[in-house]
Length: 142
Image 1: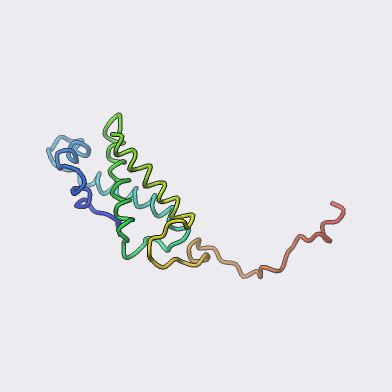
Image 2 (image 1 turned 90 degrees about the vertical axis):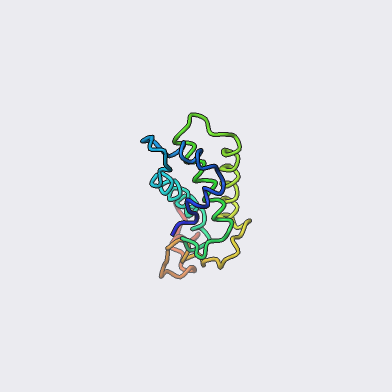
């Protein structure tokens, strides 16, 4: 499940600009596969930050994640197609990363239920926390 769609990207930029960024074959149309790949890369980046606190993919998709997905995907499209990414797109990408860092640290919330620590990381243990292998007494003489 993607956090954004090509239609979300079309709302942000003119069609001719989207064509220029994705039409490597000069067909005069939007390269749908390239847009889908940029969205998938953006969503993977988002999930890498969100997985610390949330079950991913996050569903239903919060508006913030849709916005971040669009901003990161558009930045990716510019990055692959032009020598210099427009400053406004680069700043939106940097802002998206700062927000994702806030989500992973817990200073920014998505407004959905957070996963508990074992669900979010996938790590489980059957060892009680109070059974220390290395103790001060056991380590004497080392």
